Image 1 (cartoon, rainbow, N blue to C red):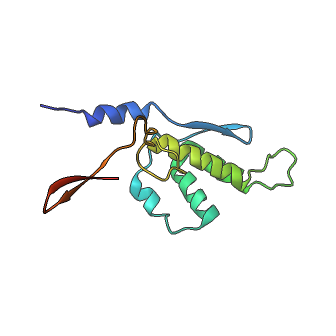
Image 2: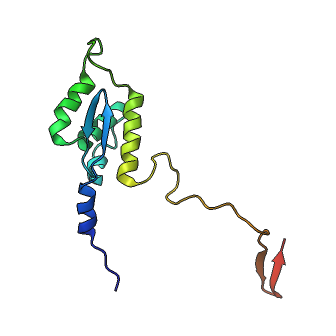
Image 3: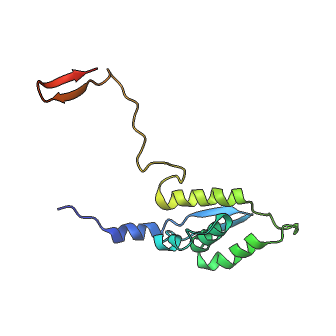
Length: 135
């Protein structure tokens, strides 16, 4: 009988919190995000979607500081402004961490290996004579 402990996998995931550095500070994320939390913000556009995503990803104890960081006055000499590209890069990395798949990937599976050997022969069934080789 096949058996798998999904609780153990979830416990293992809790120890693997994604951490990234941005603006000279280390930010810690939750080990996972519930699908419905992302579905709630799916209709948002661009920056608002990213803000909503990070509000769900950054751990609660750092969330206020994160939002202050995003809203910091760019004229302040002590503040390194964050760009939209940086946010997108962190978002892409987190999606890859959470799903194990690059957000730019167009398929769910790995690419097929290049064919080797002689070309395949195409077989067709002919109702009158049975099998015939085509090509």
